[in-house]
Image (cartoon, rainbow, N blue to C red; front, side, top):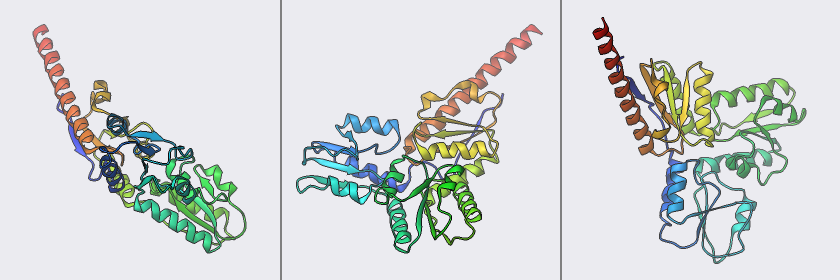
Length: 300
């Protein structure tokens, strides 16, 4: 068996929004009583690091009674009502909201101010989506095609999306809304972020040359699962891992080219470690193959 060729995606891993949020949180390690309002990143490796450095995980919806200490708003953002509930003269609030998430908030508000009925394409219950819609109870969230039928039949419709939604999926939903509500003015503001677009395109490119795609990221990471869905949607084979230890040797039997990509919450060093482990597995398979051929010659 020949060795496996490992191809890294041209764009993968931690985006600048998550990177900056992590850097801001790491800068608080020498402070007392630090609480992240939710999961900073959907990544077990990072979560373990935060815990080891005394950073607690709180709930954005349940303000703590102690008005002191430091609280961190994650890159996923928060509604203005949530921000005001956490404001206190004696509490330090570190806002790490990604600027591209801020753009979604601003775009949705501008549509509402212009008289459009608000629609958000995204994952219901996701931290980013909760922050986007938190100040606007009239918003309809489109996660599945059947949700489109909740959109009003009359009036103007304004659409934005969660930053990490696949572009193809967003465009499909927008066109579906336009076709079903052809008497309405539909305005769509594209708020899918460039890191997501770049990673989606890069993984599609990998699918053209690879037998297997390894997606590195947290099991509860939405953008990681979207990468897996993109690969499978193209008819290619994908596996998702969080750490090098999750790799299974049998996955690589008969595989010549492996692509490696990662969600936007994944540390670069984790991606490199996974790539190195794949190369080591390739060597193990090659050694086993040589041993098998050697025994076959002796028997002959």
